[in-house]
Structures are given as structure tokens and as C-alpha cells.
Image (cartoon, rainbow, N blue to C red):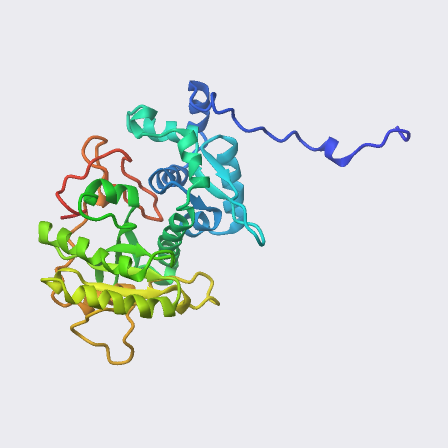
Length: 356
């Protein structure tokens, strides 16, 4: 009636509420998710299980064509309790939304491999605790490194490139923690071959001496396994990189066998910020002691680093590309597309590294 004003929002359809955490693991909710979750959704859930937290921008780089499609799908996954989210405080501006594995997502991962949720070591409160972790920025930085590589490989022009393995710090600690704990282990496939590497992501918070002394631990790892694996140091600025290279050179020269620990450095400010998606795969890497020199530039692309160390053994064929039974390995392959994660609870059938 003319005496009663009708508000536009009263004519809109009621927005669905979020599934309660207690109901997220119910039979009814799992049955509903069976008709809704795509292979990409399940791949994303496995990614969050492995790496604890990813921002909306990182998820877009890894799996979606646009920010709009990313927001729409993540909202649906949030309402279904497959993921949870938080937004950290910033002094200036606003932080992107951060996503972690939700209760329903954990139940899906567990059921997919015939496990109980408790067998995954998952608890919702622990998953959300990353929001207050002093290492949140560091974890996000490592995620930026790898998701930008994945985004580059999704470009049709770069069809010969791709991330074939990405292990979290937690997984690295389980396998190498008695000797060294890398920030990540990765494998990068390009037209020049496949490079496996350990990543040390530096935020500038620790002394350069402490950073360089990590080479001693990597030397012990190489000595115990007989396998030389490059260590890549990703630093925030060129100035920081210059100081780090001096400290690394001093420690590296003290090693009994310097060839066992190939080292290369790069700085984030060397990337072209004007490009759509800056990537550490471009020509920004400077080997510490290269035995062969490039003619035009001393910097290498990520895939070209194998040429800097001619004596480096080729990366073995990776077992991460194969489907693994839940009790046979803890490897997880990350490919986009198609997203085919292997079981999150498995234990790799190897003694040192994936594919060895």
C-alpha cells in the first residue's frame, strides 16, 4: 500500500547461511557436497591441507581464470564449511581474505582416502590459529613464490613449464628435520629439463650470518644421502641479496665439497611489477659459484639453472605424478590443470627425496 514503503532488499531471495561446524561432518552434508564439489575444489582442499593457508589472490593464481570466479566459488565453499577464512589486520589498507581448510573440507579429504578426520591430524581451531601466528607473513610469502610459478605455467604460451612438486615446511620437517628444515621443496619442469630445489624464503628478519650458516646443514644432508640438491635463496631486495651473497660465499667456501650444495640467489625487487603476474621463473637467479657463464647476462631463468651446474645429476623421475595408496606415501602432486592430488596422509617410498 502507498502508506507502507517496501524496501528492495525485502524482495530479494533469502541468502543461504553457513553450515554449522557440527553439521559439516554429518552424513547429510557429505551427501550434499558429493553433488557440488568439483575436482578443482578437492584439489584446492588438498592444497590448503598441505600449506595451511592461502590468500584469495594465491588461489586465483593457482586455479581460477578471474577474480570474480574466484570470489564466487570461494564464497560457496565457505558457506558449505569446506573452507574457513579470516582477514588479518593492516595498518594501511585492507589485507586480502585468507583461507584455511574447513571442517567439511577435512571430512571430504579423509573420506576420499578411507580415513578418519583425526587421522589427518586436523582440528578446526588449530587450522584457524595460523591467523595469529608470528610466521603468517613468511608462510604467505612461500605461497606467493609457488602460486606465481603455477600461474605462469597456466599461460598457454608456457605449455612446457610447470610445478610438478611443492612440499610445505611441515612436510620437509618430517623428512629432513633431523638435519635441516627447508621452507619448501619444489620441482620446476621447463623446456630445458627439470630442476628440483630447496627454497629458503628470507623476509629480512634474521641475521645474514644465521641465514648463511644454513648451508652447513644442507651440506650434512647431501653428505648423508649422496645427492646434491640446489638451494635457492629468495630475498626481498637487491641490497639484501648482495649482503647475503657475501655471507653465503664465506660459509660455502668452508664446505668440504662445495659442489654438493649448489646455491643461487634472487631478489623480489628484480621482478617487473608491471607484468600481469610477476614470476620467479624469469631471469633473476644468480648462482653463487657457477662453473659455466652465460654470454649476455649473469642472471638465469629458473629452468636454466641446471646449466649453471653441469655436474649436477638430472632430477630423477618423480613418483609424485602417480596415484598413491593412502598408506604408501605422503607425496602430493600439484598440477593445474588437471588438479590431481594424491593422498594427504601417505608416506613416500623413498629414503631422501621425491623421485629418488
